[in-house]
Image (cartoon, rainbow, N blue to C red; front, top):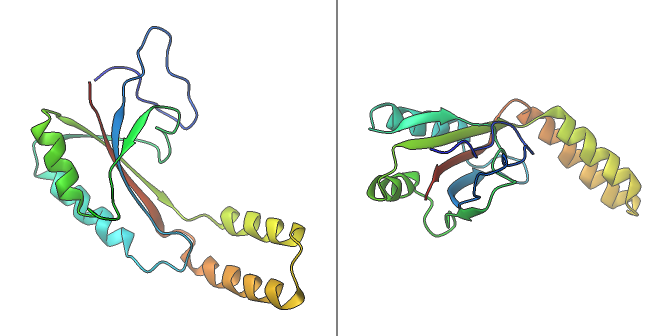
Length: 151
């Protein structure tokens, strides 16, 4: 594995390292309410990886945003095991795993944006109710990412 894997969100690729594509599987719940239990899926993925031959690097969610990424079609092929099987067949031994929890600041930001938008009173009430309801998901896993470096 080369040093070009980002260790934090928005970090630049070090000089002299070529930006090679990273294959990427991601599952997010947007917008809340969460209708997919990502906490259960997170546990399942980590349990699967624990008994596999893969080494797991705990990455930051969104940490690969600055790199060229080839994304997995999770709409048509949502099973993470297919992604990991592809990594295995490609001879990969290191899997990057990241998860992110829904934060209250996301609700606050949405409320601020909503106040700046030109909404009718009824539209604003509807959005405010949805955002209040979204607060119950604070702290819940809302994003999972798996990736491997393919050279």
